[in-house]
Length: 522
Ligand SMILES: [Zn+2]
Image (cartoon, rainbow, N blue to C red; front, side):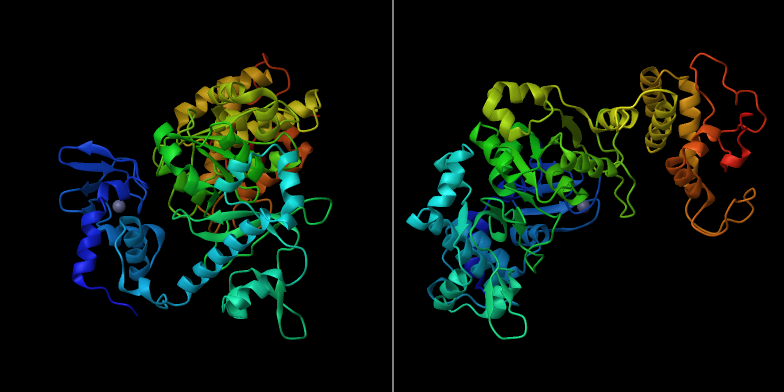
């Protein structure tokens, strides 16, 4: 293990501005001689994270962590001390003793990074060779500029089973390292490995430090799968990163907003049109980890969903962010789209015309129209509520209205702030053509049910089925899955009429079970 002399470490500390380093991850505001912002290491609403440029240190008065530039980077990017030293030395232009020799081993991670970087370079070079013509033609057909392709380090995996394996052999890379990085696959029933990516366009997925950690491979034609991605490796955990986050970070901070798109090409096209603050979700879901990553750099995130089935799925997954999590961070979103417990990230949804995604829209309509769609983006909650109200099959009539009522009530039940819930209930009720009070009461009732911690159901009134986690959850499920149950327990159908539950002695919003609610004679 390399140890670094005090002189070298001091050189690096002097050369790296701690405010500059930290502000790549945290929005800092000047506070006297120091800077402060939201702590990246614990969830907080008011800043207690201080950075002192004179002393070159940071300290959080909330969770107590503190240290110098090395300590910050180790904690932030989960690096070992030697990794942090090397990263900052490179940045500061300070030469390290090992720069003259081979890299010291530190648990193999450093070697895996080296292998990934070699692969990224190998694939990128292949793209611009004669054999890469197929990929270049594909890029041209998608309207991707050569300059953008180079900036993003796009690559092409050669045809054949062992192009990369052979190249790595010449670089003295072991088969174990190739398998560990997901670049090669172990042959079954015999020794040896073969290339995972063959004859594909490759998008390099990099961490926030710009290090290659995974690849996304797209087929040129009808080969399946259309997308083939790196598996999870010691360097890459799905859902923790965003495509192009390293390239987009400066623009995200400058513009104080991030655009989240679904596809690699959407992302490239957005950058090509001047939206350098664009990142792509890897896979179809936006995760809390990805959003908390964005929260460090900006106050506003705008999500783009395709109008197709995959886009709907992505929207559903984003709406799941409205669900309370068990991890302590409440991802509840207020009506303006602000997270209640996760700091100040507003989540909005931009809608493009049906059939368009950011890629096709930008090419057809241009940057100004795209910017207009960003301006018109609405909060995730308002968007989710509209989706809850709209019938998925486009049906109308009493039955679909009953279902819409149930979905809207369930969504409203997840709104933490009762004031908000009441306001949203009014909006939703107007759209549904129902009595707002009725909708609000139903939402409150479901909220009580959802919030009760799971546990033994003891003295609660006559549970219809026995067993955990709770009668109420069963009721919600029942309401969701059975139209009959909904009709019985949500007794309204024509708006202006006096609610049948009003005045009923058994209609308290705290009713624990649908069975205590009055039924309509049918
Ligand atoms: Zn803290």
